[in-house]
Image 1 (cartoon, rainbow, N blue to C red):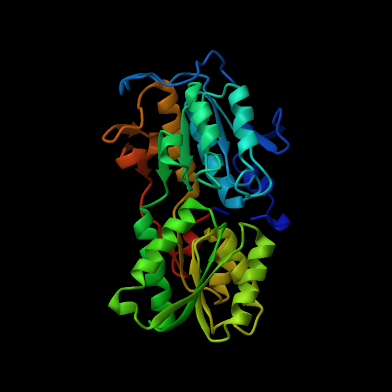
Image 2 (cartoon, rainbow, N blue to C red):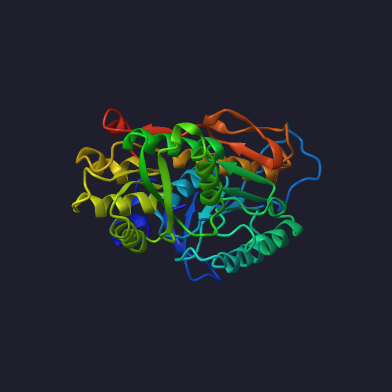
Amino acid sequence: MLIHSSARRRATIAAGVGVVLALTAGCSGTTKDSGPAAGGASTGTSRAADPNAAIKQGLKIAFLPKEIDNPYEVIVDNGGIAAVKELGGEGKEVGPSDASASSQVSYINTLIQQKQDAIVIAANDPNAVAPALKDAMSKGIPVVTYDSDASADARQVFVNQADSEEIGRSQVKLISQQIGGSGKIAILSATPNATNQNTWIQFMKDELTKPEYKGIELVKIAYGDDDDQKSFQEAQALLQSVPDLKGIISPTTVGISAAARYISTSPYKGKVKLTGLGTPNQMRQFIKDGTVTEFALWDPAELGYLAGYAAAALASGQISGAEGETLKAGKLGERKIGKKGEIILGPPTVFNSANIDKYNF
């Protein structure tokens, strides 16, 4: 899910995690590595899962975000890299500078050539990346998706930040409370093909059909393409084209922060409500100046941490991704694998003026 803003460079975020920047061979983007390579790790997963198998040492696991300069996904991948290092392996982040549907494919192909032990990816498009991911799996490289899923047959495990239905429905509840249960609303999403965004939006639409929301009208869905400036412009266009708009839901950290930045210095401040999914550090100033009342998110570092453990467990043969298996995830404890290989991190936290200073991510 989520900013191209030069003011929030990924290096700023990565500094606190202690990672080293390097170039990826064969890719034009940036690579972030963590931990010395122990070497000698074999590639692929065993055919039959053995929950008592030890995690292989020296695993090479690559994290492929939607775009390399997205602060949210940098936090996620830093958490994953930390997990891999904790397990005695080597993690790195590689990725494109744009969030287009096919931009990740060349990186997947390069990671296959490099014989990575596992690939962890937030898919820009569930179908565009599928052939390359299937190729990786056919060569014994396990695939874990996080944040935004790929086609279910193109990965073994999907680490979901929270229950998709809960995310979508809770967003409607938040905006309804803020606008008094009546008025026109819009959604400012990421890219049109983003699996997570579209799933959440479908649940939002369904929630809006309930009698308690009969006074709320969804008038438009806009797309900022996970780009800070475009999201800013889309928020501006929404407010100018719908003069009686009462609220905006932006279920993307790029979109909500860009929209908040626009509203904060506009005549719409205090008149148009904004909620969605954002990080506390991005949104703190907008909570404190009254632009935003409440928004939600999970801990992105923990999402990456869980994905890192899942990838290592797959590569070591501890799990296969089958429903009912148990993943041992370090400080996060155990997680059961659900239908279609889904593992859920946990419910999102709602942030407001009373608790936002308790969080730093």
